[in-house]
Image (cartoon, rainbow, N blue to C red; front, side):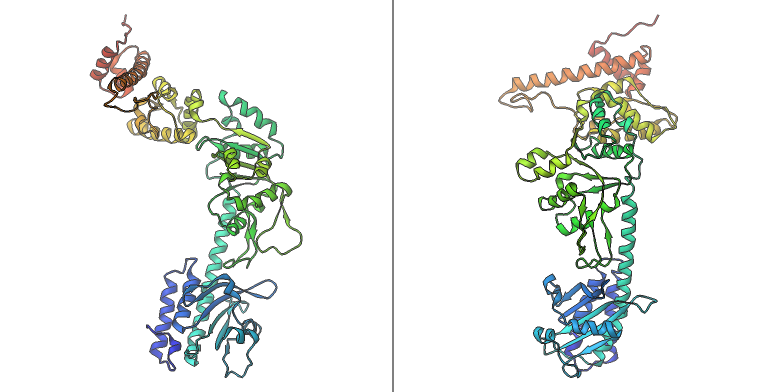
Length: 533
């Protein structure tokens, strides 16, 4: 059906049925989508040849607000949402009946009809399924004088109204379900229990941080946690919140959008009808966290134009959801723990982050050290991951593995998160080799696959790669690197031999290499072996 129905003065049953089928086919394909209402309005506008198609929701004060609006070219600008006849909409609400208006209807034209050049309009109330309560209004109007609106056109509109009413109800149910799911998720930090604060801060390298955290644990001051990605900033933030007893604990991921309305809605919520598409009320994360703790993850990602929102809340504890029209703002007492892997001071110098917000967030600043600066903690961290993932076994790391993990051969660019993933994969390999094992060795680790790989040889001009113009320097750099690797290999072999009483076959099995290969390397590296008595 290429031509709109309103281009035809007369319609037969075939054309009318084809139009209804077209509406159903379009809607059933997107019924569970947020775009279902827009799709339905598009078909309605296209089939009827209308200039405007709108769906309005009844508000708590009895007024009707446009939530979806479509035209011949698709979406209509928000400023044009008011370009409708409110008189016709109000008549549909008051009577609970479909309203037809045209110059021959016997009803005088309202000021808006005259101003907008409307030559015909239709409005139908939408009831909730199984109820006579009017939930909204479906509205179309025509401004092209070449269009015709007769009984058959009205019949199609009358048939489309309950269909779109059902789609509206379905959309509201989906939004309500999503909001309830979001509320449940907001009240739990993660699917995995947060390790106790004492465990996170038990390592010797964390004692300075431990002292600072414990001094602020029972307070209300905001905390800012800095550090590279993967150092455990969010885990520490959640553990602090748990240990302080300030629940609920809500985590807010910032930077997913730079739209001010979206950010405001996420943090502070919105009232029903606050903007186009706001069919239901939404509770913001701040309200979920009332009386507890809110963790702002990657606070540097918050766009500058939205930082003022957070600043006002940190200063006064007050906020306004979108569409909140009362004189007094809402209030929520929450403790804020913010985290970022970015350089906030540089961001302030560049004008990307508000200095006043920084000082509101940084009552206590914690710098999480990268894993490469706390190598002595790596074996203990690895064993802690093993105990958590597989508490039924008493896992240990072989001595050669401990030495390799602590060596400077790896930079660990992914920090603690990277170590956790590497240990998990090694455990899987170990169990695949021996279902009863409780020991991880070097052979279970794919060290070459660790992100970032081995630390590069100390950089010297012309020594990073083979330079034909500097062959002597390149050769020397390679020898230096070979010597360092040989020393590490010798340490691992000596440890394996010591563990197995000098028995090469057993040491080879521990290291995951052939006995002949290990014997050859022992000879090449000049490793002395203890003689068995």
